[in-house]
Length: 253
Ligand SMILES: Nc1ncnc2c1ncn2[C@@H]1O[C@H](COP(=O)(O)OP(=O)(O)OP(=O)(O)O)[C@@H](O)[C@H]1O
Image (tube, rainbow, N blue to C red; front, side, top):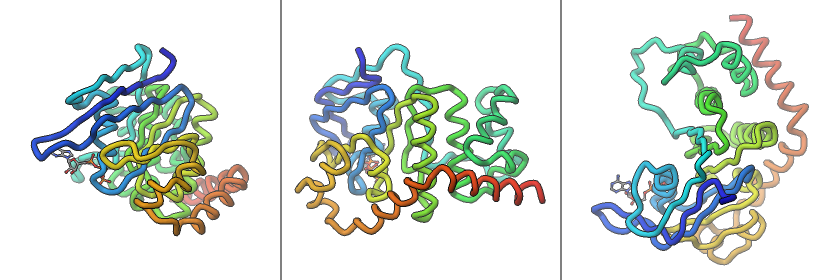
């Protein structure tokens, strides 16, 4: 088996009815696959099926035996009265190697925030903390569920550029869900457009011009796509610069 996860003719549903029907899906090592679809189209349900959190009603899901998933949830339910710092958060559920923690916080740009309470982070910083924690398990598949919710367009573009860089460094495949189509799509090798079933899939360019996709999302996203491309082309210098700014601010506090 070469795919990390493979789903064949999978269906899923709850008491309220069928949510997914006849879905074929796979993700290969090192691939970035994005699942897009309107609210309620079954994106989160598909992720939960793939990781085995819920059983399929029909069809079959196969996971490669060496699959190691790093999961970046949308949010975590953490008691806001708990004085949990970013650094301590990375010790949950099990204590992590200190050097490794520092290296990962550095890599995702939150090292100056190590001693800050988790609850005081901005949306973008918080997602980076979740990302660092997910990376501690050295995943070969990183799964992100609406990771950029609440970030502005520039923040999202930077976050996705980081994800792409991490994929290049670690070789991990990335599976993400988003309804922020325009920004996320260019970072993807393959896009799966979901609406209870797979409407269309392929490279971002193919999906973007597919009639099924246009019927669901329209065509008015070119400006945002251009912004991402621009950011992306200049990402490396740009990012180091940003992290430096973070560092300076962080050590001052
Ligand atoms: N545990 C559950 N019990 C009952 N119904 C559920 C459950 N989880 C999801 N659903 C229903 O399944 C459908 C798909 O939900 P899902 O969360 O997978 O969609 P989504 O595409 O991720 O949506 P969104 O973009 O809003 O996050 C919805 O109608 C939802 O109400």
